Image 1 (cartoon, rainbow, N blue to C red):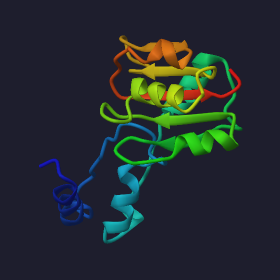
Image 2 (image 1 turned 180 degrees about the horizontal axis):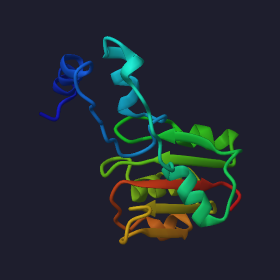
Image 3 (image 1 turned 135 degrees about the vertical axis):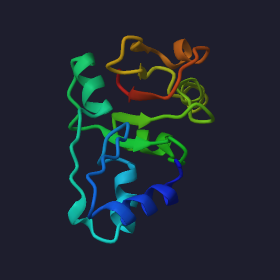
Length: 157
């Protein structure tokens, strides 16, 4: 099965007799299934986390920019008032989804809220053969379609 409860039941039933790997996409330390497993596994001594390069780290490297001053957030199936965050921070980085919080909808909201002069970078399918990194003003991004992506908003871009 592939739902969380079934995965957890399998882990709890087999953790002491089998070596089990749970492969997760994304960053293991940022809105990951890791927190769910740690909360619900009977004994977390069996957990060994092996991280890869995070999508944030990868995209900023491709952009040749640093990210120590960035606000890191997620609108992947969750809400975040990133416009409010943008009033306080110059760089906002978001994990997006394919629905209401898609890169083009984020661009629309930026235009609506008066941030049409900021710079947006959208990274899709990062590190894969079909990787796409697009940079532009919000109006440039509004009519583009993206799968789940990482969005970097630079207020003073």
